[in-house]
Image (cartoon, rainbow, N blue to C red; front, top):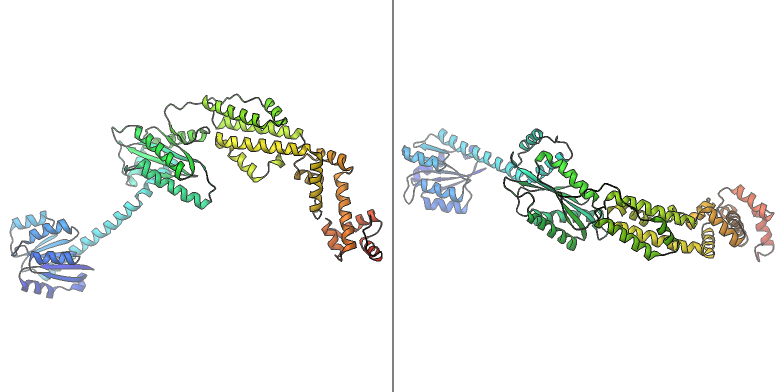
Amino acid sequence: MYRLLIVDDDIHVVEGITFDLDLEKLGISELYTAFNVRQAKEVFQRHPVDILLCDIEMPQGSGLELLAWVNEHYPQTETVFVTSHADFRYAKEAIELGSLDYLLKPVLVSDLERAIGKATGKIHQTSEANHYHRLWIRHHPLIIESFWLDLLHRTIPSNPVAVKEKMAERNLPYTDRTTFLPVIVSVQRWHKELSPRDVKIMEYALRKCAEEIIVGSDSKAAIVPLDRGRLLLVFALGEGDIAVPEELERHCETYIDCCRRYFYCDLCCYIGKVVQAHEIPEMYENLAALEYNNVAFDNKVFLWQGIARTDGQVRLPDMNLWSTMLKSGAKERILNEAADYLDRLTKTGGMDLQALRQFQMNFLQMAYFVLSLRGIQAHQLFSDRKSTDLSILATRSVTDMMALVHHTVDKAIAQTEAAAKTNGVVEDVKKYIALNLGLDEMSRDVIAAQVFLNPDYLSRIFKKETGFSISDYVLQERIRVAKELLSKTDMPVSGVAITVGYSNFSHFTKIFKKYTESNPMEYRHLMQAMGASAPES
């Protein structure tokens, strides 16, 4: 619905127009009247006005003066002049001021309604256009983001013609002369334990911080979220813009420092070189490879220019010497050797992902070999969650690799020392057997896995210490506990069988009789007859 203001110094004209108009038909919800320019301005200041129907020549100011004021203060209002003067000068000025129509008195009702209908139509069209414009403004960053993602994923072919067509199709603010500078921002690690929801919140904070510190007032720059704490920043450059402005490096350094202090993370920025839009995927892949191979540096800005390439061949440390140190428990020497080697490789430019992986494989092979000599099963010893996580993350950086080295050496030496204490190992095995007699599976391999020892090695030291094989000891313990339960409790025989690890009742009965010369019920009756003073030995 629309609001109409009629301005004319002739009260009869105002009343006549008011009487003749079918307000409901025209969609007019509010009708205001004024008899001079001053009154008209007061109406505007009190009420919103969509359509102004105005005379030109009036005392205390003309309609043309009023229209000039309306254009300045209420430009959304549409104006129709109704005048007695067919003066070309008036008509020309009215058109220049943006009057929608110019009608001569006496005006036919049909002409007046047509002019008002024309005004309401234009208002509707403008309102709809403004609505879509607002939507476009709101979603334009998403359109740009979608364009760059489609280009990176090769949904848009990487050729100038296809890229140009998609830019025009999506109405992107770039020209044929626009070049682009890509920057990858990549989180290396979080310094706090974060839930998936917390990570999303922190990634949003990192993006907003990048908008403020790195992008700043550059309205043509795009920020594209990638994955796992990674962002792609694309700066659009015009002719004469500096390829890699020093201030961009400074902004990235400031951003890194801010994120490190306030968002509990280490990250790096990788600045590419200026390319055409269709060259962005290749430049992005180059930067991603640089990011992928950065295992040596934290919180640093990298420039694509002048990056040295390694040939993939690195000299690995003498693992025979390291194995000797691990056998002797020289923990600090191994840790110092590892730190020195990784530091030297970093300083000489030979440190990349491949080199770090080679180091990890050789180091673990050495550690597992030493453990195997002690009868310790490394795959069991390092099957816990922490060991697995550290091993997975180790090739992410030198820092993470040293965390794995510390963990592996600590655990290997501790277990080696424990295995060297035969009495301690045997006691641990006995405790495990006592606590788990109800398990169906109580094999030598299962028990050896609990103390991280090779089954053959464990069998040798267990028999040497106790005089029994592991299987004989388990059997004796099962019979001993079964006799206790039969003589001192009313537990059903089937329950006793299950308690000591026999789910098959007949098999339990057969084994029990073999070692006691009576079946379980006979043994219970015998013990009751004797007063159950003590179990039979």
